[in-house]
Length: 371
Image 1 (cartoon, rainbow, N blue to C red):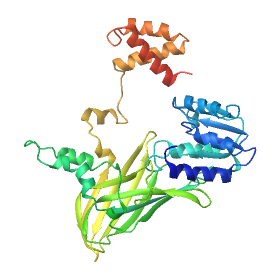
Image 2 (image 1 turned 180 degrees about the vertical axis):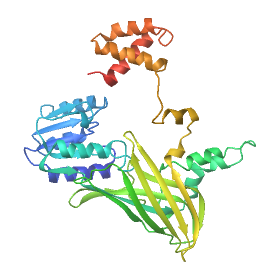
Image 3 (image 1 turned 120 degrees about the vertical axis):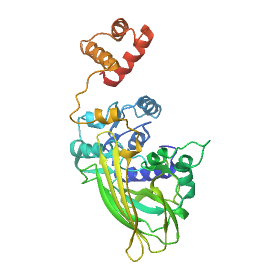
Image 4 (image 1 turned 90 degrees about the vertical axis):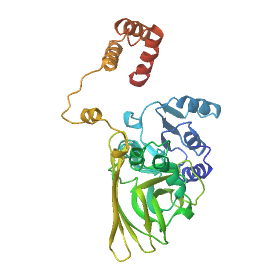
């Protein structure tokens, strides 16, 4: 984050305007701790900095180096798993990916707002607005689809094209590659949002003759009153990039042709399942083409995998699962890592032929599930 100057300058300004001497600040996803450090610099009395990864150790070191270790309490966990002794006057976060609909971002903000924010408290960011526009980009098409469509030593590779056309891609789409005016498809107000899902519609009108290869999505962020930034095509580059959703195949458009777009993003608890339905119509309203695409179709699933995901499926533990279950049982009994590694090696010799292999795996499980 610290290398992204546009984003850092906006967050710095928003925090400077929002934090008062004596404020309590919660930094969700603190990473290297730079926002927690800024909170102290701007007068925060106490900062709770939450980060699940081991990067939090660097944040601790930086807090000590800058003289703020006594004011920052670091918590290595997910924000949804912790409580704090006093509610925050300001909650600051940037858990987005290319888009705000990313992993557990929205559920984390909703949970923090309802459990950890003081009455009348401030959220940074305040809102994000999502935009879409038609894209004419032979270079993106060549990068994503062409390798599967071109002849390679006489081999038919076209099945791969169907998979890549049902995924969205982080892409550097330029402003000159847009072939429609942007349309707002959704707004996320972090002070009121409750659902992590998206259900949106937009009608995009071609402003020139050409071939459209898909559509681009980006967001405009508002961090505080008059403070924000955008990852729109043509703006200063940000770490987010932009999202490019390809069509199943390129479509020729004339000026005034419409593309009616239905967008759905469903949060599955771990990630998002995206669906996009497109209808192409001429300037007179006549239907020309249409696609139904989904990231569910963008992953190669075998019949065995599909069966394993059915609600009626009764799973059993494989060898790896049985070993992990036993190791977790020993952890629950209070045995040391060394003792567990020795037991795992003896009981699951085929999986852990040496104590070193067993110790490495046990340590991994302890790091993930232990306290």
